[in-house]
Image (cartoon, rainbow, N blue to C red; front, top):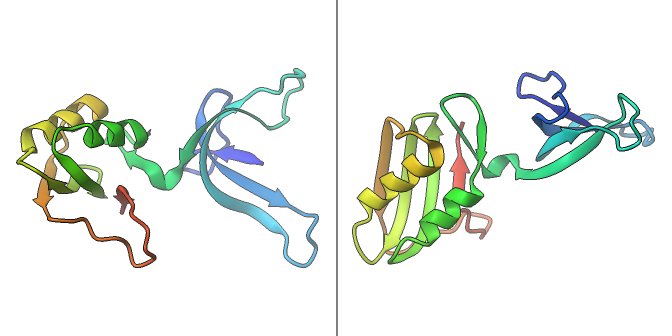
Length: 154
């Protein structure tokens, strides 16, 4: 198991990284640096030995993150809670098409543009260059039948 930065170099202890596994035991189809899609914070081994892989925190799925302008990935869960708690929101989906480019599909009882911008400011720490809100009666499900609240195309 390895925790790697986005550039493929090993994450340091205390630093987040994506989980990759290598398995040489399956001789017919070994897994070599197989990406699991999870984000973790690398920890030190409690036994004190250096070099043994250990995790201090599991952060979540890579697909459940927003890419910030500083290159860091932010978990969507807190952002999602803030959107869900806006008065009048029935459904929502955030689509990130670029670091500064977001679409918010919203099924709501009223116009919430100002509140949406407040959520971006509060959770990203800045206002992205392009945030578009599209109001719909219902948010369509994905072709696989699932309802995703975040789609990242970056």
